[in-house]
Length: 107
Image: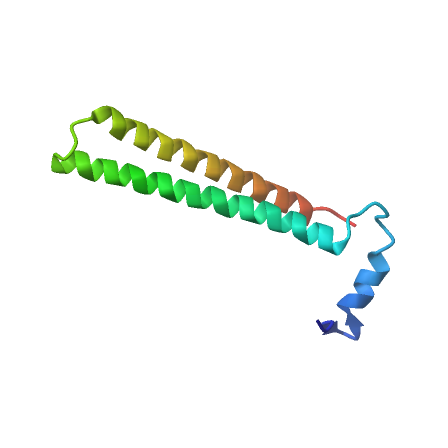
């Protein structure tokens, strides 16, 4: 990977300059694997929310078409989808708050 050059200063120069600041910081591979783990967890959460929403829609269609007269299953599916969506939104909001806090840090 080549270093980007901005006004004669490369990203490698900046990285080398600040590499000694945090002595206990994880290596790039540890940091990238930690990010990948968090990212995969977030993707799994979104996929699970999508599946629960789809299941609720299937139950709604069954009930509306008269294929099912079990209102309990419909309500349970809708509640699972709603709780999963609320949790996903809460995690997203927390991630955005953390990002904004990091961006507002002064070095």
